[in-house]
Length: 247
Length: 225
Image 1 (tube, rainbow over the protein chains, first blue to last red):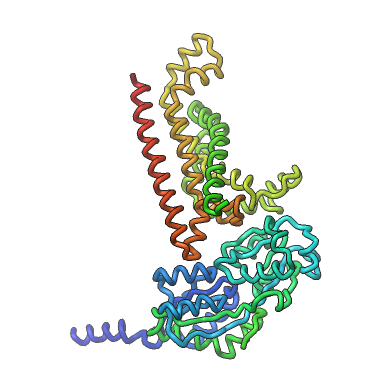
Image 2: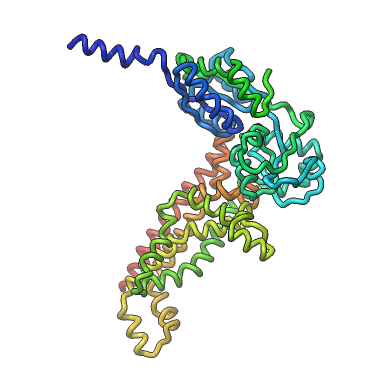
C-alpha cells in the first residue's frame, strides 16, 4: 500500500517533470505565427502550450490583475519593460522576437497601388485601425496618418477595432473599405489577396515586439523553453515567413 | 466635450430613441400575441424572445453580416442611399431595437393578457371599435405594463455591450457608448475614469429598479381601488 502511495505521489509530482504546460499571452498580430510555432515547439520539447490572444494593452491589464500567464509576447517594448519595472516579470528575460510591419489593406483587389496617394484622395467611407491606446499597431497607424498630415482630415472616418484581429475582420467583411493591419495578417490571409500597401518604415516608429517571462512562469520549464524556442532557427523561419523582421 | 460625458449623452440618446421605437413597434406585436390563438403565435413569440437567450455575439455576428456591404440589409440600405449601418449611430439603434425587443413585448403581452376578455367584450357591445377598445380600455388598464416595458427597454439598451463591441467601431460621439468607454478605461488601466462611469451606472441601475418597484406598487393599488 505504501508502495502504491509512493508511486502515485511520484506520478503526480515528479511524473510531469519533463512535460509541463505553459500559458502564454500573445499579441493578436502574432496569432498566425504562434499557431504555426506551437506545434513545432510541442513536438520538439514535449511541453504543452496554452495561448490567449488579445491586444497588447488588454493582455497587460489582465497580467497586472493577476491573470495566470507564464509568458507575455507583446507587440511593443513599453508593456514588457513596464512589467519588468513593476515586478510582474523576471528581470533580464526580455528580448525582441519580431519586428512588426504595418500595411494598408483592402479586401478589394486593385483598389490602390500606392496607399499613401489613395489615402489622400479620401475616396472611402471608413478606415479601420486598431485601438491606439491598447494596440501598438493602432498607434503606428496614427503615426502614419500624422506623417501624411491626414490625421485631422480622416478623424471622422476612423473606426476602431478592439485588437488588430478585429480590425482585420472589419476590412475582410467589407464594413471598412480599407484598414491599417499587420503585414503578417495579410500574409496569413487565405482568401482573396485584395490590395495591400506595405507602409514605408520612416512613416512610423519601429514596432519592436518583445517577449518576457512573467513572475508566475519563473519556475515553469515549459515557459522558459518556449521563450528559448522562439529565439531558435525553427521559430525564426516561421516568423520571417509571415513578413516580420528578426534581429 | 469631455469624452466621458459625450459617452453618457450618446448612451442616453441611443436608449431614448430605442425605447420610443420599441414602444411603437412592440405594442402591436404584444397586442397580437396576447389576443391571437393562431398556431403561428408560438413560433413568433419564440422569435421575439430569442435575444433573451442568444449570446450578444451571435446577434452581433449576424447583424454585421446582414448589414454589411455584402449582406441583404446592406444592399437595401446602400440602394436607399443610406450607406451601410455598421459603425453608425443608426446601426446601433437598429441593433438595440432587436436586442431589447423582448423587454418591451413580454411585459406588454402580460399586461394585455391580464386584462382578460371581459372588459373588451363589454366595450364591444357598447359599439366601441377595435381601435377604440384598445385606446380607451386596454391601454389605460395596461399602464403598469407600459411603464415596465419602457424602463426595461431603456435600461437594457444602456447596458448593451457585446453587440456594440462587434458592430460599433468605438467612434467617439457616434458609437462609443458608456459600456464601451468603461471597457476602454479598464483596458488602458484608467481606473479613475472607469470608477466614475461604472459607479454612475451602478447608481443609475439601482434607481431604475427602485423607481420601477415603487411605481408598480402604486399603480397596482391604483388599478385595484
